[in-house]
Length: 334
Image (cartoon, rainbow, N blue to C red):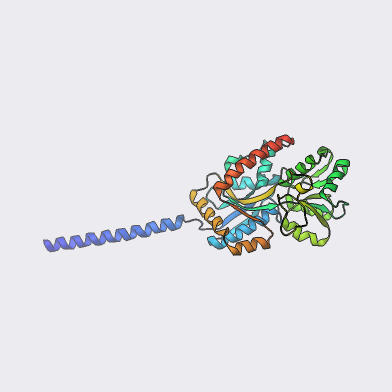
């Protein structure tokens, strides 16, 4: 009887052990299946290729793909001043596989409109990676030698002053309006040209001489200045840009309010899982100390400026409040 009992006990122990092993394998499989990401990620750019959002997205996507071990595909979806791309992101399943390259333009557009199909609360901002200064570009065919020359011309002959505003409600539209307003120009009489495709086609219009002036990023300046078809008469940063020390800031030239930077970072639906947020927060932290990433950013003419999600959200709240007030002051909010 004891012998039979011993066998029974041994069989029970073996069964228990096998059960534990099977459970461990099952738990491991579940954990592996839940580990983000396990498939390609789409990073939507709501503007045309070649602009600030697009270049920033490609820089971040390349680094993320290398570190995450999954492709991060940049997808340009243009239309409705960025709204089309945003709606595709926010209507997608909030699992971290459809994200958006976020930036100041999104909120300037939201600040200037009351008919937006989503609110700032619908978006989960995942931190800032980049903050680019904007340059004031002019066609080489114009007679202006300084930013003040351009503004004096616009003040004297507003109906003859044409300028590319980028997308409706974009950063450059706001910045251009701020500058003109501060210079005492009759804005309503100027020829403001809106480009639904965003900054890239607006810069091209300055290059082609279709408009007299507009805004551009450092990458635009580096790419187009050698052609001799554009001139750079100012920059929106608080201090001069190191790579172009001869370009004075707008505030040095008497326009202290024309200070604004184009920030960029990934965002998604407010319902993104914490796991996704944690992965991208760590990715950002790693990038901030990665010399290879910094070298690549320099090559792509992007200005790195990191803020973790908590820091970025705190700054965003203040910035957006100022945007709303400015939009109301300039009569942009409709």
